[in-house]
Image 1 (tube, rainbow, N blue to C red):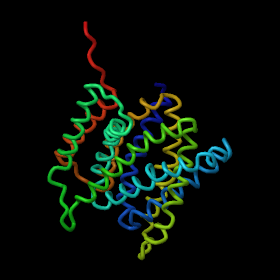
Image 2: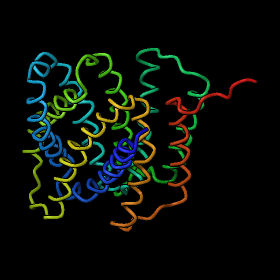
Image 3: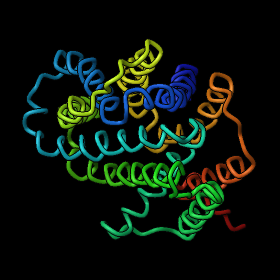
Image 4: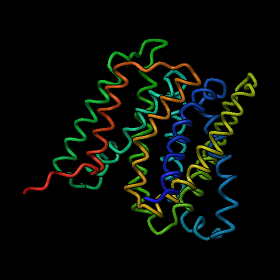
Length: 291
């Protein structure tokens, strides 16, 4: 890995870690639908001109149906669910739930595509389940004011991301990653546009919420996707996906420094177990060679 790759990798982790901070600030004032409509819409406006100048509109037109599906399962649903979760969960906690995405991707592959898992990957899945149990222990409260629905929303988001991973590979493997990002964000923005209008907040959001929203859309979505696809081109998808491990570290750090969010023992222990399970599931830990 070159020095420029390391810089891109750390920068991307820091930006995506900060995205949970932006969600935490903006979601209570905008609400999940309006916020995510703005996120996808603004990101699409940033990405579309770049993509059209480089590759034209032919790919977007010919893959419109598939891009719409990805826009739903990789933008509209998970973005909205994570925004809802961020209204009552800390940035660090939400990021740790998000880190379970590779585990859900493995489950979806097993159930939908009958993908075979090694013994280490099965161990990783089991660790992931244990880690999520530790992480959420005592917090799944569905009474008024409880965080149970927020946790469920976060898990729905990661399940949606897991499905999107396989669907994109099956249906859009011949399309450029930049095209998938541009098309899916455009589709997601259009799908969320009616909800943005219907659920626009009655009280005008503060300047701080607007700044967080713009940073979420431009920095943590449009610019971050460009960085991510550059890493994929240089390192490959598997190595690029290890960004998953650093995102919670930055999210917890940003939350502690800027929002005075605490880190509890169950968060620390559960987060470590989830990340260990993810490492095993992704195949980053190899079985020992026999001598």
